[in-house]
Image (cartoon, rainbow, N blue to C red; front, side, top):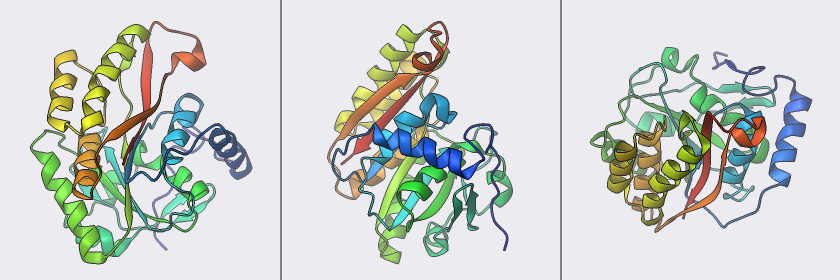
Length: 262
């Protein structure tokens, strides 16, 4: 069977299944439940840096969820917006793709573009570990301008309605990249504040105003917009951290946020 092989196992997260499982168990042991989020923002750096924050995001969804995760990640290589139809491999086993839902999204299917992209891949072991009966619908977002947000959000909501799927949406994104920690925290939290009231237009304005180098601002806005269509009213910042919390180097950090939309 053709499947999407692990591209960054052994780099972004452990390739050894027992090591990976132990690490994920450690991450989730440090989380708290905040309800039943319709969507979350989860970072996609190496697990040593952002894994605990990612676990906090996924912990906002009850572990008995067995529907479909729409995983939206940015393209770091400039590929077009596209979906994946094949199963995804993880060191913990294969995660099945909800092919019916992906077809219903009515977007380009391009397995080649997904082959080496890490933004979605690093989310999949979290799904496999915490939600063993769930499936995924991987969506890579190419153009991230504000005009592209409502169209993709509508496609996701309409596909879920047509297929009668229960979905949760994960926006994969890091925030500021390689700036002093004080600047990262100030600018990231300023941008995130706009999401508390689901104001994606203001989120984009603040991202531009402060030149926040969040790589997945488009997927974040799509997730928030789609969740709003599904009835969500507000977003909550669960945890914010930087790479400096791990390395001790506060001069150039990457910012990470776990955000739940309910």
